[in-house]
Structures are given as structure tokens and as C-alpha cells.
Amino acid sequence: MNNTNKDDNLENNQDFIREIISKDLSDGKYKRIITRFPPEPNGYMHIGHAKSAFVNFSIASENNGKCNLRFDDTNPSKEEEEFIHAFQNDLKWLGFDYGNKVHYSSDYFDQLYSYAVKLIEMRLAYVCDLNQDEIREYRGTLTTKGKNSPYRDRTIEENLDLFEQMKNGKFKNGTRVLRAKIDMSSGNLNLRDPVIYRIMNIIHHRTGDKWCIYPTYDFAHGQSDSLEKITHSICTVEFEDHRPLYNWFIDKLNIYPSRQIEFARLNISGTMMSKRQLSELVLSNMVNGWDDPRMPTISGMRRRGYPSEAILDFCKRTSITKRTNLVDLSLLEHCVRENLNKSAYRVMAVLNPIKVVIKNYSNDSFEEIDALNNPEDPAMGSRKVPFSREIYIEREDFAEIPPPKFHRLTIGKEVRLRYAYIVKCVDVIKDEKGEVIEIHCEYDENSRGGKPADGRKVRGTIHWVSALKSSRAEIRIYDKLISEKEFDEENSDNMELNPNSIKVLKNCPIEISLENASEGIHYQFERLGYYILDSQDTKSGSLVFNRTVSLRDSWAKKSSFNLK
Ligand code: ATP
Ligand code: MG
Image (cartoon, rainbow, N blue to C red; front, top):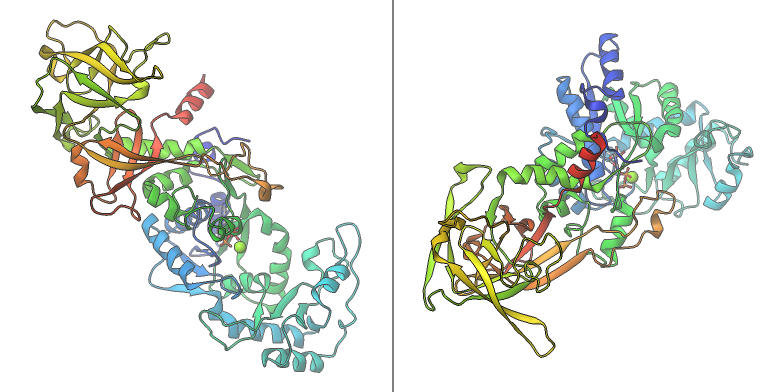
């Protein structure tokens, strides 16, 4: 299912979540909206998280409410400080304001422990000695009922004593758990006496060695929402079946009732979107770290040159629905292009060079040609580009035997060199294999600026770089991360990395002005695409450019086709 309607249900800025919230406000159910963005710090922020952050932060600000950033750090085995810093950095870069306070589920470990004790005292929780496999076996399946644990009827005293011993480190990892006592025959597997505390002798990044038992996500999440008085706890649909469990805890503990609303995860074609899978790519060195420009992470996108405004624009344009949807990558690229078209500096670079010698141009001189920095925005001014007898053009811009409608360079025909002169191909030089290795042209000296004095029509315009006065760069071209055309949620582990996801071109001629290129500035290499200096691998005197996106807009084509 492709998300082809650009603005989908945001036409009047109302989606089903906003509708629920408006109604709750008008019914007087809540006075001030508080949402939260609750990442688990076990990986870097990706565009799916950006979507969730966008929903939570924008709904809060539209309603003069607030959105808490809360790290759901209940599983110390997978969590790291590095991820916490990275999330904060990425959120700030995207412009999300989470205020001065960062919340952590671990802030509530004491409170959560006393909630667990309270459940034991109400005979609603028990210490269970079954191991993981046995618990799974006793749980039953969707079609068969579960079986009660033989430890289900322990007395309150015994449970309190055992739970305290668990807390005091008296038992080994995995030997006992605390479970909620709900209903082993419930149609909802989440209600079949779920585990709420497990023993993990692991140092926690914030609480150190204070705890050797940790609450499960299911036990911590809803209660953390409640403790922060979150009015609307917006999450993704896989938690729909957990909602009755969260409501059960809230009801039994008699605490502040946050309202959970689920929407479909954002999936994008040509990439994967789970921290677990992305982490595998990083750990197995299949990519160069979390900020590899091919990654759907915010840090990867930033390094690749996606502007934050374009990412937010994309989040806004993709609809909020209940059903799973797969958004075409071309929409994201469209948002990037639209943004960069307005702001990027135009320059010239040649990726696959072939030399052109202009036979009637003076041998030893070069001249400076005026070139606009951005025809979309005259305020961006112009620059001087050196022109000389020898230049490079793209190999693909010349054809000895031109295909139909080829408006580029071919023997006996004229073409315009962008901002410079009209040239005509008069000859070619070939190597022993018969391949063209040099093109000989003559220029029309009365066509400076690309306008022939006699007004004759020359259709094609190609880009070029002086061979005499230019610079060189490594240029990295990216393609989809995975080969699969359609996202396959069921078989997402089988997705293969696209072997052509990166292509490195060394020693490409680039316009001399790029020697002063600076980090974070977007360039349009004319006729090729948008590029940015690589923030990691560029060293002084050796420039590395990442292609942010090509110029060809398949989204615009598709959507105009759809409108017909
Ligand atoms: P992942 O598998 O990538 O780790 P997750 O849901 O476990 O995903 P969390 O760190 O727990 O990741 O997510 C933080 C918030 O972001 C949650 O509210 C989650 O629902 C939301 N989120 C994560 N991925 C997406 C996505 N693809 N689309 C929309 N929201 C998402
Ligand atoms: Mg998670």
C-alpha cells in the first residue's frame, strides 16, 4: 500500500488522534495535554522515531501542552549512554523542545518497586520459580488456554519475603520472577500472568548496582506515563493488545489514568526500521556506524545532507493511520529536493570525466566566467568559474552514434557549455580498443555566456570543469540500503543489503570554488544532484562529498501521474 496522497488525512490538519484529543479537551476530561516521546536507549534515533516525536511534540504544542522526553531504560543489558546522548542531539537538531528536564523510567524504580509490593499485598502478584521455557509452555497459545503456575498460590508473606530476597540479590539470574496474577485463560495472552520483574545482575547506567531486579517494559511503561501525568500516551499498534494490561495495572493500583492511543508504524520502502536490525548492520560492519549516510537514522541522514526541515516536512506529509502503511522512499527524497532546490549553491563537478580540447582556444590562458549561485534565488549572487582550452565533461554527455533525441555532444553538432560558450565537436581521439579518450571541439567566441551572437538555436546545455584550474574530490553515491522492493514485515530478517548501496568515485574534477566548501553547506552539482561535504572523512586538502539525493524526482512524476 503506497502512501500516494501527499497530504492524506492532514488536509484539514485533523487525524484520528487529534480528533480524540480535541474531544477529550472539549469534554473537560483533561485540562492540559501532556504527551511523551519514550525511546528505549538501545540504538540511534531513526526516521520512525522522528515520526513519533513529530506526532507527540506537535500535538502538545498545538494544544499549549508539553511533551516529555523519557528514556525507557528498564533493560540495562542493551542500553548505553552513547544512545542517550545521540537521541538528545538528534531531537535538538530536528528542533524538538523537550525543556530542561529529561525523564527516565529508572527515576521511578523505587516507586515501581512499591507498586509491585502493593500488588503482592492485594494478592495480585506472586513470585514464580518456573524458568523461561516453562513459563512459555504454561502460557498456552492463542487457541489453547494457559495453565496456572504451581507457585501461583503462595501466601502474601511468602511472596513479600521472596520478592525482597530477589531484590537483595539472594537468587541467580533467571531463577525467579514476579508475575501479575490475572487470568491464565484470558483470550489476550498479555493477561496470562505476565512477568513484571526479573532478576538481572547487571549494572544500570544510572542506578549503578543499586538494583539487581528490573521491571519489565510492560510494567514500567504505563506506570511511568501515569507518574508523569501523561494525558495521552501515543504509541504504535503493536501495543494495542497490551492496553488492557496497562489499564489493569492503573485500575488495581488506583493511579492516574493516561489514555493510550495507537497508530501504525511508519515503514519506508528500500530501508529497514528497527533498532535491532540496524544494530546488527553496525555490529557486523556491514555499514560504517550508526551515522553511515545509507542508514535511516537521523544522524545518517544529517551526514548525508538531509535538512532537518525536509525530515519534518516528510513526517507531516505522511498520514497517521491505524493500518500499516508503506511510504515510498521517493516521497522523502522529494521533500529533501524541494527544500534544497531553494537553498543549495549551484556548482559544477564531473563524475565520469572525459577530456575536451577546444582547438581554437588560446593555449595558455584561462578566463573567468560569471555563473549564478542559484537561479531560484538571485540574492545568492554569482561567482567566477575559470574556463580554459582543456575541460572535462561527463563521458555520458558525448555519443559517437547518438541515440534519438540526444541533445548533447556528438560529432559535427553544437552544444552549450553551461554559462560559457557554444562548442562544436570536430574530431575524437580513440585508444587502441577503439574507445574515445579525447574529444576535440571548436568554440564560437561570439557566444560567451552561452548566447550565440547570431541568435541560432542550440538545444543542449552540458556542465563542465576546467582541466587547467580545478580541484578534485572523492564522491560517494548512495542508493537504497536494502534490495527488497516491498517492505516485508514478516520476513524483515531476510532483507538483503543492496550491493550497490554505495559507489565511491575517486578523483572527480570539481569546480575550484569548492576548495572553500564548508561543512553543512548544501551544493547542487548542476545536472547531477545535491551534495554535501562528508563530515567524518573530509580532511584538509582531500574533499569527500556525499550525494544527498539525485535531481530526478520520481515522486513528483508519480503524483502528477496519479492526479491525471
Ligand atoms: P525499534 O524496533 O526501532 O527499537 P521501538 O518501537 O522498540 O522501535 P522505541 O525506542 O521503543 O523503539 O520507540 C520510541 C517511540 O518511537 C515509541 O513510542 C515507538 O512506538 C515509536 N516508534 C518507533 N519506531 C516507529 C516507527 N517506525 N513509526 C512510528 N513510531 C515509531
Ligand atoms: Mg523497543
